Amino acid sequence: MTEVWMRRRYLLCGLIGWIVTAAPAAAFVAYVSNEKSNTVSVIDTDKWIVTKTIKVGQRPRGIEFARDGKSVLVAVGDDDKIEVIDAATQQVVDSLPSGPDPELFTQDAAGKVLYVANENDNTVTVIDLEKRVRVGEIQVGVEPEGMTLSPDGKMLINTSETTNMAHFIDTATRQIVANVLVDARPRFAEFKQDSSELWVSSEIGGTVSVIDPARRTITRKIEFSIPGLRREAIQPVGIGITRDGKTAFVALGPANRVAVVDAVSHAVTKYLLVGQRVWHMAFTPDEKYLLVTNGVSNDVSVIDVAAQKVIKTIQVGELPWGITIAQQP
Image 1 (tube, rainbow, N blue to C red):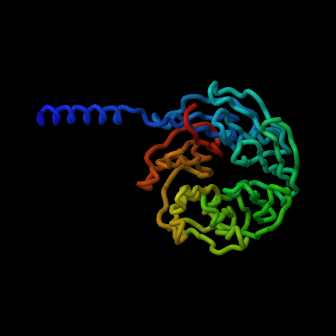
Image 2: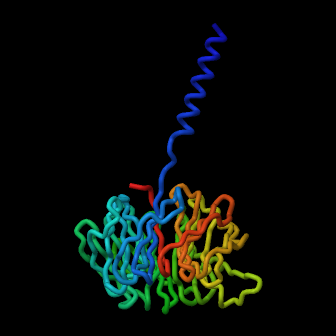
Image 3: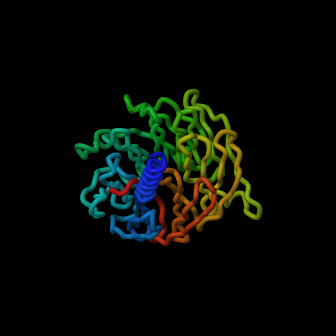
């Protein structure tokens, strides 16, 4: 009796193991905006291949999945609008109004409000995503670009490239409540998930400012040094911080490297050689991989997050700029 029971148990365990092994992993898809070719490349992150190229408006840059995952929003700067790509059909199906030359944007957690940096008129446009209309404008510094929301949604951050500031905007009143002066040409802003820090990259200054969001003061500046490269060739732009707040990745532009940073000590631990003029980045939702856009070499580098090494290069369109990743619809 015992032998029969053991045999059944063995067979049952084997069946369960087979089911677990056979269960398909979550499939993710990446969308890359190609600024010069006026296209968006669609990447299958299982096969690491481009499966489709979507024709969009002129000079696509900022790009994000909508919160419900059903569409992809892309800022087409020279057309002064945000185009909407249906994620199921992978076709442009609609557009949203924005101010002149939209660049980066961010959404609230509910996916109802879109905040857009309009580089040419020094404003942040507020768009009602359900009604698809502009509902407000916020005057900010000269050449606004970086856009992010605090995890609680109460504070909107915009960076202005020429004013060299991070603007803290109250989302309830839509008023600037603080300005933090950072180094030259701030391009991107990213909160830690626990709201303890705000990181702002300064392209010409060559630093990342770590800001205490509560006190709105700079507590640390992260600097970069790569043997054989002049300091002015190291230009931080995109930032990605893991959800646990322990590791950060910083794209260093024409240095052709991504810096790996201990996000607790703020020490740079490694530099990863990627393509030419690395710009923006996005994690796969499971954080196993980080994909970065390389504008001059017209490709995307795939980084294994745990191993901290580049494992793949994928050719895309001309001058890849932004990237967004979500689960396959």
